[in-house]
Picture (tube, rainbow, N blue to C red):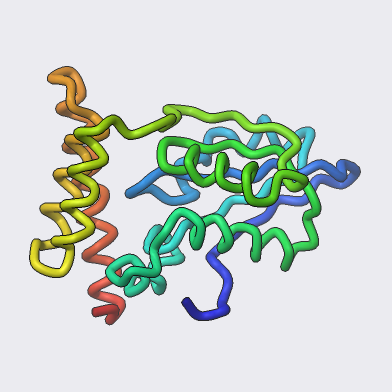
Length: 186
């Protein structure tokens, strides 16, 4: 990965020294947090980050297609942003995939994490999920990217009542891919 930073946006509080860092899920972007800004901004400094291949960090899409896209690499992307902004520790709010990243930050850079709020937490992959993810990783150069995204949506949301959420997840991923391709990223 290049040494450029992920897209991030901050909101500074006039008197608080405490930070809250928001980490979105797969297929999303930092825009998912727009309803939380007003309430958190009253008490904290806020940092919103777009993960690799998401939102305005879509220039990293090539890394997703390579072997460089690991949880550790994505975790270190966020630590680099914290270092750049000179944020020593923060409260973290993660959603879905973001919960894995926040937990990794707690493991790899535990002094950086004051507290964690994990929404839709992915605590572990069962054996079936692990096998499907390994097959997806092995076949990512042969199978269209959106088919893998659809498979992942089914892994994460397998219940019949989650059908609408699966479709929304895949639809948002398609939008992201179209934006990335129209920006000239191959």
